[in-house]
Length: 235
Image (cartoon, rainbow, N blue to C red; front, top):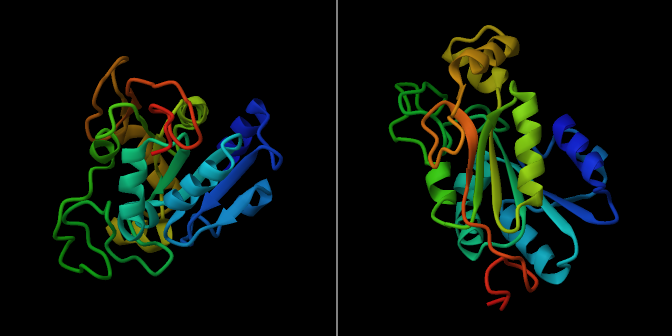
Protein backbone atom coordinates (compact mmCIF):
# COMPACT_ATOMS: atom_id res chain seq x y z
CA UNK A 1 0.00 0.00 0.00
CA UNK A 2 2.88 2.34 0.76
CA UNK A 3 4.37 1.89 -2.71
CA UNK A 4 0.97 2.31 -4.36
CA UNK A 5 0.31 5.48 -2.37
CA UNK A 6 3.74 6.84 -3.36
CA UNK A 7 3.12 6.21 -7.05
CA UNK A 8 -0.36 7.70 -6.87
CA UNK A 9 1.06 10.82 -5.26
CA UNK A 10 3.76 11.08 -7.94
CA UNK A 11 1.18 10.76 -10.72
CA UNK A 12 -1.31 13.11 -9.11
CA UNK A 13 -3.95 10.44 -8.57
CA UNK A 14 -6.54 11.16 -5.89
CA UNK A 15 -10.23 10.82 -5.05
CA UNK A 16 -11.13 13.26 -7.80
CA UNK A 17 -9.69 11.23 -10.68
CA UNK A 18 -9.15 7.67 -9.42
CA UNK A 19 -11.18 4.71 -8.21
CA UNK A 20 -9.62 1.84 -6.29
CA UNK A 21 -11.59 -1.41 -6.52
CA UNK A 22 -10.93 -4.16 -3.96
CA UNK A 23 -12.19 -7.66 -3.23
CA UNK A 24 -13.24 -9.00 0.16
CA UNK A 25 -10.16 -10.99 1.20
CA UNK A 26 -7.34 -10.06 3.55
CA UNK A 27 -5.87 -7.65 0.99
CA UNK A 28 -9.03 -5.56 1.06
CA UNK A 29 -9.08 -5.62 4.86
CA UNK A 30 -5.77 -3.81 5.06
CA UNK A 31 -5.33 -0.04 5.19
CA UNK A 32 -6.46 0.57 1.63
CA UNK A 33 -9.37 2.64 2.93
CA UNK A 34 -6.85 5.33 3.84
CA UNK A 35 -6.38 6.09 0.14
CA UNK A 36 -10.03 7.27 0.16
CA UNK A 37 -10.80 6.24 -3.40
CA UNK A 38 -12.11 2.76 -2.72
CA UNK A 39 -15.00 0.68 -4.02
CA UNK A 40 -15.70 -2.69 -2.38
CA UNK A 41 -16.63 -5.22 -5.11
CA UNK A 42 -16.99 -8.73 -3.67
CA UNK A 43 -15.50 -11.44 -5.87
CA UNK A 44 -15.99 -9.59 -9.14
CA UNK A 45 -13.48 -6.80 -8.73
CA UNK A 46 -12.09 -6.94 -12.29
CA UNK A 47 -15.61 -6.83 -13.75
CA UNK A 48 -16.56 -4.05 -11.34
CA UNK A 49 -13.51 -2.06 -12.38
CA UNK A 50 -14.31 -2.59 -16.03
CA UNK A 51 -17.86 -1.37 -15.51
CA UNK A 52 -16.62 1.78 -13.78
CA UNK A 53 -14.20 2.46 -16.64
CA UNK A 54 -17.01 1.99 -19.15
CA UNK A 55 -19.23 4.56 -17.45
CA UNK A 56 -16.47 6.97 -16.42
CA UNK A 57 -13.67 6.55 -18.98
CA UNK A 58 -11.84 9.64 -17.74
CA UNK A 59 -11.10 8.01 -14.38
CA UNK A 60 -8.04 5.95 -13.50
CA UNK A 61 -9.35 2.57 -12.34
CA UNK A 62 -7.15 0.34 -10.19
CA UNK A 63 -7.90 -3.11 -8.76
CA UNK A 64 -6.09 -4.27 -5.61
CA UNK A 65 -6.97 -7.82 -4.68
CA UNK A 66 -5.61 -11.19 -3.63
CA UNK A 67 -4.78 -14.25 -5.70
CA UNK A 68 -7.83 -16.08 -4.36
CA UNK A 69 -10.24 -13.33 -5.39
CA UNK A 70 -8.64 -12.76 -8.77
CA UNK A 71 -7.54 -16.22 -9.91
CA UNK A 72 -10.20 -18.49 -8.44
CA UNK A 73 -13.41 -17.07 -7.01
CA UNK A 74 -13.37 -14.14 -9.43
CA UNK A 75 -11.31 -15.91 -12.07
CA UNK A 76 -13.93 -15.83 -14.79
CA UNK A 77 -14.22 -12.05 -14.43
CA UNK A 78 -10.44 -11.71 -14.66
CA UNK A 79 -10.24 -13.96 -17.71
CA UNK A 80 -12.70 -11.92 -19.72
CA UNK A 81 -11.33 -8.58 -18.56
CA UNK A 82 -7.96 -9.70 -19.91
CA UNK A 83 -9.62 -10.70 -23.18
CA UNK A 84 -11.46 -7.38 -23.59
CA UNK A 85 -8.36 -5.35 -22.75
CA UNK A 86 -9.91 -2.47 -20.77
CA UNK A 87 -7.61 0.33 -19.70
CA UNK A 88 -7.44 -0.75 -16.03
CA UNK A 89 -4.62 -1.71 -13.69
CA UNK A 90 -4.75 -4.85 -11.53
CA UNK A 91 -2.41 -5.34 -8.55
CA UNK A 92 -2.44 -8.92 -7.28
CA UNK A 93 -1.33 -9.43 -3.67
CA UNK A 94 -0.20 -13.01 -4.19
CA UNK A 95 0.40 -14.88 -0.92
CA UNK A 96 -0.19 -18.34 -2.46
CA UNK A 97 -2.90 -19.22 0.06
CA UNK A 98 -6.43 -18.44 1.19
CA UNK A 99 -5.14 -16.40 4.10
CA UNK A 100 -8.28 -14.71 5.42
CA UNK A 101 -10.20 -17.96 5.92
CA UNK A 102 -7.44 -19.84 7.69
CA UNK A 103 -4.92 -21.15 5.20
CA UNK A 104 -6.62 -23.38 2.63
CA UNK A 105 -5.07 -24.33 -0.70
CA UNK A 106 -5.59 -21.51 -3.19
CA UNK A 107 -5.23 -21.19 -6.95
CA UNK A 108 -1.57 -20.15 -6.74
CA UNK A 109 -0.50 -22.56 -3.97
CA UNK A 110 2.58 -24.50 -5.19
CA UNK A 111 2.02 -28.18 -5.77
CA UNK A 112 2.97 -30.24 -2.71
CA UNK A 113 2.47 -27.41 -0.19
CA UNK A 114 0.90 -28.49 3.09
CA UNK A 115 -2.21 -26.48 3.95
CA UNK A 116 -5.15 -27.06 6.25
CA UNK A 117 -7.18 -28.32 3.29
CA UNK A 118 -4.30 -30.36 1.83
CA UNK A 119 -2.37 -31.80 4.78
CA UNK A 120 -0.65 -34.29 2.46
CA UNK A 121 0.31 -31.53 0.03
CA UNK A 122 -1.54 -29.52 -2.61
CA UNK A 123 -2.50 -31.85 -5.44
CA UNK A 124 -2.64 -29.58 -8.44
CA UNK A 125 -0.20 -27.28 -10.19
CA UNK A 126 -0.89 -23.58 -9.53
CA UNK A 127 -2.52 -21.37 -12.10
CA UNK A 128 -0.04 -19.59 -14.38
CA UNK A 129 -1.02 -15.95 -13.98
CA UNK A 130 1.63 -14.80 -16.41
CA UNK A 131 0.35 -17.20 -19.05
CA UNK A 132 -3.26 -16.13 -18.52
CA UNK A 133 -2.46 -12.42 -18.76
CA UNK A 134 -0.30 -12.94 -21.83
CA UNK A 135 -3.14 -14.54 -23.76
CA UNK A 136 -3.81 -10.88 -24.52
CA UNK A 137 -0.91 -9.82 -26.77
CA UNK A 138 -1.52 -6.18 -25.82
CA UNK A 139 -1.38 -6.62 -22.04
CA UNK A 140 1.27 -5.63 -19.51
CA UNK A 141 2.50 -8.19 -16.97
CA UNK A 142 5.00 -7.64 -14.15
CA UNK A 143 6.26 -9.93 -11.41
CA UNK A 144 7.77 -8.53 -8.24
CA UNK A 145 7.79 -9.14 -4.49
CA UNK A 146 7.13 -7.11 -1.36
CA UNK A 147 10.88 -7.22 -0.69
CA UNK A 148 11.78 -5.57 -4.00
CA UNK A 149 10.35 -2.16 -3.19
CA UNK A 150 11.98 -0.19 -6.01
CA UNK A 151 11.06 -2.64 -8.79
CA UNK A 152 7.55 -2.90 -7.32
CA UNK A 153 7.10 0.85 -7.45
CA UNK A 154 8.41 0.96 -11.04
CA UNK A 155 6.04 -1.84 -12.08
CA UNK A 156 3.03 -0.16 -10.48
CA UNK A 157 3.81 3.16 -12.15
CA UNK A 158 4.29 1.59 -15.58
CA UNK A 159 1.14 -0.47 -15.15
CA UNK A 160 -0.95 2.61 -14.38
CA UNK A 161 0.49 4.38 -17.41
CA UNK A 162 0.01 1.37 -19.73
CA UNK A 163 -2.68 1.96 -22.41
CA UNK A 164 -4.72 -1.17 -21.81
CA UNK A 165 -4.97 -4.06 -19.39
CA UNK A 166 -2.06 -4.18 -16.93
CA UNK A 167 -1.38 -6.76 -14.22
CA UNK A 168 1.25 -6.65 -11.46
CA UNK A 169 1.79 -9.98 -9.69
CA UNK A 170 3.27 -9.25 -6.23
CA UNK A 171 4.60 -12.13 -4.14
CA UNK A 172 3.56 -11.33 -0.57
CA UNK A 173 4.21 -13.19 2.65
CA UNK A 174 1.41 -14.53 4.85
CA UNK A 175 3.26 -15.72 7.92
CA UNK A 176 0.20 -16.57 10.03
CA UNK A 177 -1.66 -18.91 7.70
CA UNK A 178 1.06 -20.02 5.32
CA UNK A 179 4.62 -19.15 6.29
CA UNK A 180 4.92 -20.97 9.60
CA UNK A 181 3.23 -24.06 8.15
CA UNK A 182 5.89 -24.33 5.45
CA UNK A 183 8.83 -23.69 7.75
CA UNK A 184 9.40 -19.94 8.14
CA UNK A 185 9.85 -18.60 11.67
CA UNK A 186 8.86 -15.01 10.92
CA UNK A 187 7.60 -12.65 8.26
CA UNK A 188 11.12 -11.27 7.95
CA UNK A 189 12.40 -14.78 7.17
CA UNK A 190 9.95 -14.88 4.28
CA UNK A 191 11.15 -11.47 3.09
CA UNK A 192 14.74 -12.70 3.14
CA UNK A 193 13.63 -15.73 1.18
CA UNK A 194 12.24 -13.43 -1.50
CA UNK A 195 15.53 -11.53 -1.51
CA UNK A 196 17.60 -14.65 -2.21
CA UNK A 197 15.11 -16.71 -4.22
CA UNK A 198 13.92 -14.15 -6.76
CA UNK A 199 16.31 -12.88 -9.43
CA UNK A 200 15.77 -10.19 -12.02
CA UNK A 201 15.10 -11.45 -15.53
CA UNK A 202 17.39 -10.19 -18.31
CA UNK A 203 16.23 -6.89 -19.85
CA UNK A 204 13.89 -7.37 -22.75
CA UNK A 205 12.68 -10.80 -21.63
CA UNK A 206 9.47 -11.94 -23.29
CA UNK A 207 8.79 -14.55 -20.61
CA UNK A 208 9.64 -14.77 -16.91
CA UNK A 209 10.82 -18.04 -15.45
CA UNK A 210 9.66 -19.15 -11.98
CA UNK A 211 11.14 -16.92 -9.27
CA UNK A 212 12.17 -14.24 -11.73
CA UNK A 213 11.12 -10.63 -11.35
CA UNK A 214 10.62 -8.41 -14.32
CA UNK A 215 8.22 -6.97 -16.83
CA UNK A 216 6.73 -8.47 -19.98
CA UNK A 217 5.13 -5.87 -22.23
CA UNK A 218 2.73 -6.68 -25.01
CA UNK A 219 2.16 -4.51 -28.05
CA UNK A 220 0.37 -1.43 -26.74
CA UNK A 221 -2.66 -0.19 -28.63
CA UNK A 222 -3.86 3.42 -28.54
CA UNK A 223 -6.62 4.01 -26.05
CA UNK A 224 -9.86 5.02 -27.73
CA UNK A 225 -13.47 4.77 -26.68
CA UNK A 226 -14.57 4.06 -23.15
CA UNK A 227 -13.41 0.68 -21.93
CA UNK A 228 -10.66 -0.78 -24.01
CA UNK A 229 -7.43 0.06 -25.74
CA UNK A 230 -8.34 -1.82 -28.89
CA UNK A 231 -10.33 -0.36 -31.76
CA UNK A 232 -12.36 1.90 -29.47
CA UNK A 233 -15.65 0.46 -30.60
CA UNK A 234 -16.68 -0.49 -27.06
CA UNK A 235 -17.88 -3.87 -28.29
